Image 1 (tube, helix red, strand yellow):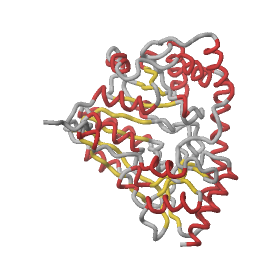
Image 2 (cartoon, rainbow, N blue to C red):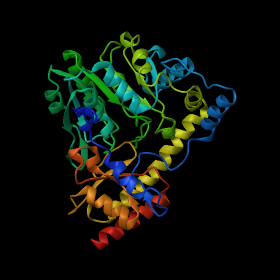
Image 3 (cartoon, helix red, strand yellow):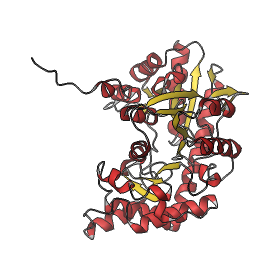
Image 4 (cartoon, rainbow, N blue to C red):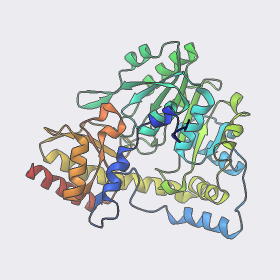
Length: 391
């Protein structure tokens, strides 16, 4: 008898990245105006790079603590405390090898095979697929569009969070829609989950990228008690243009912290010291806040250029949203998002992410990352207009 060298069924059933499918079709071409990935077209600020370079020059190339350098954990705790008006202890912080690694570690900490995890969608595929890889049952709860805005029906979500639910996962500001949560909805969800012992995993990676006049999006932690079953995920990728650094963090209840290093050890062991030195600079150097504010200003200008360009076509629906770095839209009469995305790359040199990459709720939609210079956005809109004129 011979046995086929195949992966286990759970892995085989995972959804591959449709964003990568489109990007792979256009990579290597110099004529592509690419807006498919969620990252800025500008590099990490120089002062952050220099901090990492200095650490390398000084030989900081050894293993670090599973939970991260004490200086970085303290800097994160002080940053979040200041940002959200709370008192957060550094003992509750775990540094991870990227935000997506933080998501996976959080799932491994609280989920077992067969557990029920409710995910608010559409959502970045890694958020929904991670629990499936662990063996959990994933229940999708879609956002709706009301009065031209992305909206969460909080009452209906709470009805879905029955006592047999182990975990609810929220991503706000949301990728791909830009949806942000109201504090009163966060509080209602957390209070319900507290009563029933349901874990809340709040992905707040885009918390600084909001365009409603506030400094940061509302955080679940503002409504939490120290022993609540609440885990926050964050990352250095977006606000500080550090996508390639692969550095994130978790905020966790203190009673579980003694077990967290074990899970990190069996995933990545630790994160590089020199990368952490760059992150410390991002949070503690006065240039850090300047860099975040400059990014928000540039995103605001690019966002205006894109939304005005899409509206001018007369054929595109873009529900309002206040956060992240994306326009999530659909073209009247063009429901096959994969076909549209492939045509745009192949024939017009425009790289957008297909909405179905974010789950069935995104079918027929497209995501445009506007973390780019306004002139590049304008060029992309011109290519989209040519596509619309031809079809």
